[in-house]
Length: 244
Image (tube, rainbow, N blue to C red; front, side):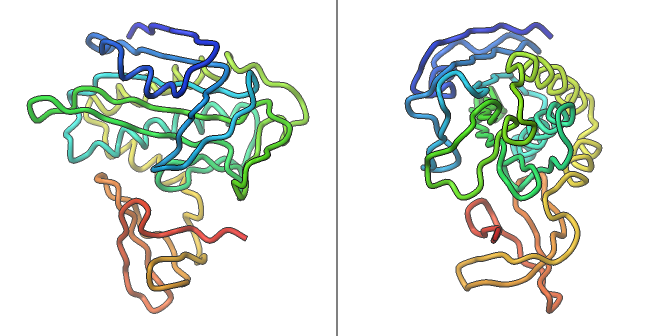
Protein backbone atom coordinates (compact mmCIF):
# COMPACT_ATOMS: atom_id res chain seq x y z
CA UNK A 1 0.00 0.00 0.00
CA UNK A 2 1.54 3.27 -1.14
CA UNK A 3 0.81 6.57 0.58
CA UNK A 4 0.50 9.78 -1.43
CA UNK A 5 0.80 12.99 0.63
CA UNK A 6 -0.37 16.54 -0.01
CA UNK A 7 0.49 19.20 2.59
CA UNK A 8 -1.43 22.51 2.56
CA UNK A 9 -0.85 25.66 4.57
CA UNK A 10 -4.57 26.39 4.66
CA UNK A 11 -7.82 25.11 3.18
CA UNK A 12 -11.50 25.36 3.97
CA UNK A 13 -11.79 21.67 4.78
CA UNK A 14 -9.45 18.78 4.04
CA UNK A 15 -12.45 16.53 3.40
CA UNK A 16 -13.81 18.99 0.81
CA UNK A 17 -10.36 19.36 -0.77
CA UNK A 18 -9.64 15.65 -1.05
CA UNK A 19 -13.03 14.85 -2.59
CA UNK A 20 -12.08 16.97 -5.60
CA UNK A 21 -9.01 14.81 -6.30
CA UNK A 22 -8.73 11.58 -8.27
CA UNK A 23 -9.28 8.48 -6.17
CA UNK A 24 -6.16 6.47 -5.32
CA UNK A 25 -5.57 3.23 -7.21
CA UNK A 26 -5.85 -0.27 -5.75
CA UNK A 27 -4.92 -0.31 -2.05
CA UNK A 28 -3.13 3.07 -2.08
CA UNK A 29 -3.90 5.89 0.34
CA UNK A 30 -4.23 9.58 -0.47
CA UNK A 31 -3.53 11.85 2.51
CA UNK A 32 -4.16 15.60 2.72
CA UNK A 33 -2.94 17.55 5.76
CA UNK A 34 -3.18 21.24 6.57
CA UNK A 35 -2.02 23.65 9.25
CA UNK A 36 -5.36 25.45 9.29
CA UNK A 37 -8.96 24.90 8.21
CA UNK A 38 -11.17 27.93 7.68
CA UNK A 39 -14.32 25.81 7.67
CA UNK A 40 -13.42 22.59 9.43
CA UNK A 41 -16.44 20.37 9.98
CA UNK A 42 -17.56 17.83 12.49
CA UNK A 43 -20.60 15.58 12.31
CA UNK A 44 -23.63 17.27 10.76
CA UNK A 45 -23.34 21.07 10.98
CA UNK A 46 -20.81 21.09 13.82
CA UNK A 47 -17.71 23.28 13.50
CA UNK A 48 -14.24 22.05 14.48
CA UNK A 49 -12.02 24.53 16.34
CA UNK A 50 -8.27 24.29 15.77
CA UNK A 51 -5.52 26.84 16.29
CA UNK A 52 -3.24 27.31 13.29
CA UNK A 53 -0.28 24.92 13.20
CA UNK A 54 -1.09 23.28 16.52
CA UNK A 55 -3.12 20.18 15.74
CA UNK A 56 -3.41 17.32 13.28
CA UNK A 57 -5.95 18.13 10.58
CA UNK A 58 -6.07 15.58 7.82
CA UNK A 59 -8.18 13.54 5.45
CA UNK A 60 -7.33 10.06 4.25
CA UNK A 61 -8.94 8.59 1.13
CA UNK A 62 -9.02 4.88 0.33
CA UNK A 63 -11.02 2.72 -2.09
CA UNK A 64 -12.60 -0.02 0.06
CA UNK A 65 -14.48 -1.79 -2.73
CA UNK A 66 -14.31 -5.11 -0.85
CA UNK A 67 -16.52 -3.78 1.97
CA UNK A 68 -20.27 -4.21 1.57
CA UNK A 69 -22.11 -0.86 1.63
CA UNK A 70 -24.38 -2.15 4.40
CA UNK A 71 -21.32 -2.72 6.61
CA UNK A 72 -19.48 0.51 5.93
CA UNK A 73 -19.55 1.51 9.60
CA UNK A 74 -16.72 -1.01 9.98
CA UNK A 75 -14.54 1.54 8.17
CA UNK A 76 -15.42 4.11 10.82
CA UNK A 77 -14.46 1.58 13.47
CA UNK A 78 -11.10 0.96 11.76
CA UNK A 79 -10.36 4.68 11.59
CA UNK A 80 -11.25 5.23 15.25
CA UNK A 81 -9.12 2.28 16.33
CA UNK A 82 -6.15 3.64 14.37
CA UNK A 83 -6.34 7.01 16.14
CA UNK A 84 -6.81 5.39 19.55
CA UNK A 85 -3.86 3.06 19.07
CA UNK A 86 -1.64 5.95 18.01
CA UNK A 87 -2.65 7.93 21.11
CA UNK A 88 -1.86 4.95 23.33
CA UNK A 89 1.81 5.82 22.74
CA UNK A 90 1.34 9.12 24.59
CA UNK A 91 -1.27 8.59 27.30
CA UNK A 92 -3.68 6.14 28.85
CA UNK A 93 -7.43 6.61 29.26
CA UNK A 94 -8.26 6.64 25.53
CA UNK A 95 -11.66 5.28 24.47
CA UNK A 96 -14.00 5.45 21.47
CA UNK A 97 -17.25 7.35 21.92
CA UNK A 98 -19.94 6.22 19.51
CA UNK A 99 -20.22 7.07 16.74
CA UNK A 100 -17.18 9.12 15.74
CA UNK A 101 -15.24 10.65 18.65
CA UNK A 102 -12.09 9.67 20.52
CA UNK A 103 -12.10 10.47 24.22
CA UNK A 104 -9.51 10.85 26.96
CA UNK A 105 -11.49 9.96 30.06
CA UNK A 106 -14.55 12.27 29.80
CA UNK A 107 -12.99 14.78 27.40
CA UNK A 108 -12.95 14.86 23.59
CA UNK A 109 -9.48 14.76 22.08
CA UNK A 110 -10.39 13.86 18.50
CA UNK A 111 -13.33 13.97 16.14
CA UNK A 112 -13.61 11.98 12.93
CA UNK A 113 -15.87 12.50 9.95
CA UNK A 114 -16.33 9.54 7.58
CA UNK A 115 -17.71 10.19 4.09
CA UNK A 116 -18.21 7.51 1.45
CA UNK A 117 -19.14 7.48 -2.21
CA UNK A 118 -20.81 4.75 -4.25
CA UNK A 119 -20.51 3.47 -7.83
CA UNK A 120 -22.53 0.65 -9.42
CA UNK A 121 -23.85 -0.45 -6.06
CA UNK A 122 -20.41 -0.73 -4.42
CA UNK A 123 -18.35 1.51 -2.18
CA UNK A 124 -16.05 3.57 -4.37
CA UNK A 125 -14.19 5.80 -1.90
CA UNK A 126 -14.02 6.37 1.82
CA UNK A 127 -12.63 9.56 3.31
CA UNK A 128 -11.52 9.61 6.94
CA UNK A 129 -11.49 13.21 8.19
CA UNK A 130 -9.50 13.56 11.41
CA UNK A 131 -9.25 16.53 13.75
CA UNK A 132 -6.89 15.58 16.57
CA UNK A 133 -6.04 18.06 19.33
CA UNK A 134 -2.30 17.84 19.85
CA UNK A 135 -0.50 21.06 20.84
CA UNK A 136 -3.33 23.56 21.44
CA UNK A 137 -3.12 25.13 24.91
CA UNK A 138 -6.54 26.84 25.16
CA UNK A 139 -9.90 26.28 23.46
CA UNK A 140 -12.18 29.27 22.89
CA UNK A 141 -15.31 27.79 21.31
CA UNK A 142 -18.40 26.69 23.23
CA UNK A 143 -17.51 23.01 22.78
CA UNK A 144 -18.23 21.49 26.20
CA UNK A 145 -15.25 19.23 26.83
CA UNK A 146 -12.22 19.54 24.50
CA UNK A 147 -8.75 18.43 25.55
CA UNK A 148 -5.37 18.23 23.82
CA UNK A 149 -2.26 16.11 24.26
CA UNK A 150 -0.45 19.24 25.44
CA UNK A 151 -3.00 19.71 28.22
CA UNK A 152 -2.64 16.05 29.19
CA UNK A 153 1.16 15.79 28.97
CA UNK A 154 2.26 19.43 29.47
CA UNK A 155 4.67 19.17 26.55
CA UNK A 156 4.77 19.46 22.76
CA UNK A 157 4.11 16.39 20.59
CA UNK A 158 5.38 15.84 17.05
CA UNK A 159 2.29 15.99 14.83
CA UNK A 160 4.02 14.16 11.98
CA UNK A 161 4.97 11.25 14.23
CA UNK A 162 1.35 10.88 15.34
CA UNK A 163 0.13 10.93 11.73
CA UNK A 164 2.68 8.31 10.62
CA UNK A 165 1.53 5.99 13.38
CA UNK A 166 -2.15 6.52 12.53
CA UNK A 167 -1.48 5.65 8.89
CA UNK A 168 0.47 2.52 9.80
CA UNK A 169 -2.24 1.24 12.12
CA UNK A 170 -5.05 2.18 9.73
CA UNK A 171 -3.37 0.10 7.04
CA UNK A 172 -3.35 -2.84 9.46
CA UNK A 173 -7.05 -2.57 10.22
CA UNK A 174 -8.05 -2.03 6.59
CA UNK A 175 -6.17 -5.16 5.55
CA UNK A 176 -7.97 -7.04 8.33
CA UNK A 177 -11.31 -5.92 6.88
CA UNK A 178 -10.26 -6.75 3.32
CA UNK A 179 -9.15 -10.21 4.47
CA UNK A 180 -12.48 -11.06 6.07
CA UNK A 181 -11.59 -10.27 9.69
CA UNK A 182 -14.58 -7.98 10.12
CA UNK A 183 -15.73 -9.52 13.39
CA UNK A 184 -12.27 -9.10 14.92
CA UNK A 185 -12.21 -5.40 14.05
CA UNK A 186 -15.73 -4.98 15.44
CA UNK A 187 -14.75 -6.80 18.63
CA UNK A 188 -11.71 -4.56 19.13
CA UNK A 189 -13.91 -1.49 18.60
CA UNK A 190 -16.43 -2.70 21.18
CA UNK A 191 -13.66 -3.42 23.70
CA UNK A 192 -12.62 0.25 23.59
CA UNK A 193 -16.05 1.86 23.71
CA UNK A 194 -16.50 4.83 26.02
CA UNK A 195 -18.85 3.79 28.85
CA UNK A 196 -18.75 0.17 27.66
CA UNK A 197 -19.59 -1.08 31.17
CA UNK A 198 -22.15 0.23 33.63
CA UNK A 199 -25.23 2.47 33.58
CA UNK A 200 -24.88 6.12 32.55
CA UNK A 201 -27.24 9.00 31.67
CA UNK A 202 -28.45 9.43 28.10
CA UNK A 203 -30.93 11.80 26.47
CA UNK A 204 -33.33 11.07 23.61
CA UNK A 205 -36.48 12.76 22.29
CA UNK A 206 -38.44 11.46 25.27
CA UNK A 207 -36.06 12.76 27.90
CA UNK A 208 -33.30 11.64 30.25
CA UNK A 209 -32.76 7.97 31.11
CA UNK A 210 -30.11 5.64 32.50
CA UNK A 211 -28.81 2.80 30.35
CA UNK A 212 -25.87 0.57 29.54
CA UNK A 213 -24.40 -0.18 26.11
CA UNK A 214 -25.45 -3.49 24.56
CA UNK A 215 -23.51 -3.06 21.32
CA UNK A 216 -23.06 -1.26 18.02
CA UNK A 217 -24.32 -2.84 14.79
CA UNK A 218 -22.12 -3.05 11.70
CA UNK A 219 -24.60 -0.68 10.05
CA UNK A 220 -23.89 1.91 12.79
CA UNK A 221 -26.85 2.07 15.22
CA UNK A 222 -26.16 1.71 18.93
CA UNK A 223 -28.32 -0.42 21.22
CA UNK A 224 -28.76 0.53 24.87
CA UNK A 225 -30.54 -1.30 27.67
CA UNK A 226 -32.27 0.90 30.23
CA UNK A 227 -32.75 0.20 33.95
CA UNK A 228 -36.12 -1.48 33.24
CA UNK A 229 -34.48 -3.97 30.90
CA UNK A 230 -35.85 -2.41 27.72
CA UNK A 231 -33.50 -2.32 24.74
CA UNK A 232 -33.42 0.88 22.70
CA UNK A 233 -31.66 1.26 19.33
CA UNK A 234 -30.59 4.63 17.96
CA UNK A 235 -29.15 5.93 14.72
CA UNK A 236 -26.71 8.85 14.65
CA UNK A 237 -27.96 12.01 16.38
CA UNK A 238 -30.97 10.23 17.92
CA UNK A 239 -29.41 9.93 21.38
CA UNK A 240 -26.95 11.99 23.37
CA UNK A 241 -24.40 10.94 25.98
CA UNK A 242 -24.95 13.15 29.03
CA UNK A 243 -21.54 14.18 30.32
CA UNK A 244 -21.28 16.23 33.50
